[in-house]
Image 1 (spheres, rainbow, N blue to C red):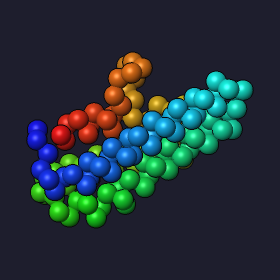
Image 2 (cartoon, rainbow, N blue to C red):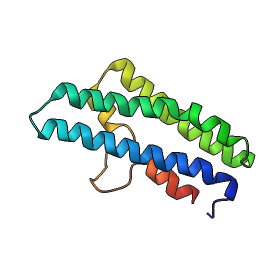
Image 3 (cartoon, one colour):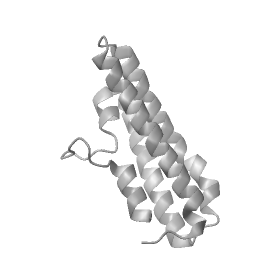
Amino acid sequence: MTAPTTLAPALDLLRQTAAQVRALEAQAQAALDNGYDTAAHAAALDEKCAVLLTLPGRMAPLLESMPRHLAEMVQDQVHSMAARARQARTVNSVFYKASLLYPDEYVAGQPNELELFIEQLV
């Protein structure tokens, strides 16, 4: 699929969000690797949830200039990610927060759900 130019701002936001998520995951892992700081680990994963929770609101103004079918697809996907992030925060599970965006059969180095969605759009 070749992304229309009206999709460019949304793709930029998705890419920035994906990079933020990866950075927060790395920060969480570093907290465990360097002194087993479980509080810092949990805080980084909570911030990952916060980033995903705000994604629909940050995306909403960018959807207006997109073709309807693309806007609906993007909106559905970001709302789904935000809903799962909200659930992870509600149950307050570090495991659930860490596994957000990753299938059960995930292998390290593979793209996560957000990165796969970006690939689908371009």
